[in-house]
Image 1: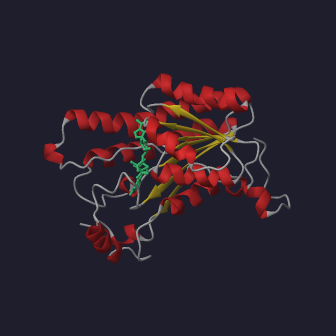
Image 2 (image 1 turned 180 degrees about the horizontal axis):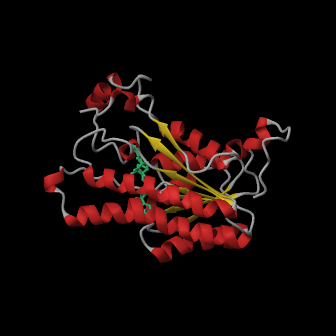
Length: 268
Ligand SMILES: NC(=O)c1ccc[n+]([C@@H]2O[C@H](COP(=O)([O-])OP(=O)(O)OC[C@H]3O[C@@H](n4cnc5c(N)ncnc54)[C@H](O)[C@@H]3O)[C@@H](O)[C@H]2O)c1
């Protein structure tokens, strides 16, 4: 991945062009992850979609007329061997890995006093340790290649302040990610690897659907300055920016993508 420097006179198109670069997107079979896969694919990248849901992976790939630049891996981000497997899949298929998007995450609600150890451990394993394990595997490969790379993590506004009750364990995992990526940014900078995060507010995805019916979404939208809940592409556009040379001078940063929602503080 040879970066186009800011001082050079280049077109916007060239800055966003990911042709010849390879990205792994975790949890990319649906929701925000699939939105990210669509935009990175459109920008020309080779894609490895890593997801725990084999059926959803099949459906995701089927939506592309030309899937020749897409591979899939059934993987659990919380398992080190699966993190290694997704990186290996990228190298085997496309010869290198340039971009990792840590997107996989789970958010089963439970009030604090009712939260089981099992739910808390599973949430931390996927949301926090998953980011660590996949980033380690990806960074090791990027360092071996010797030409830098980009790690973009989909975090949450819950890493800033709680937006609803019943997500203490999730908020803990996302606060953990916020801390993890700061030191990752420092330690990986000498290797030319940029580490940035996106913090979405509410996004209309299959994962959110069980928690928010249409009436609840109407109520939520009254409190969002932009007047609507996000769709996956709202997040994907920012991930594309952070994955490209448009973000040439960014590392260790966190971009809140919430339609202004956090300006109003806790939503409940
Ligand atoms: N939807 C929202 O409102 C919202 C808001 C803020 C942050 N987020 C974050 O965005 C990310 C994606 O959320 P979403 O709403 O698109 O979720 P989703 O449930 O719609 O999709 C998540 C995808 O990740 C996969 N996945 C789950 N566990 C996995 C694991 N252990 N290993 C690999 N893949 C796994 C699922 O199979 C699914 O394809 C998560 O990190 C979530 O915390 C979502």
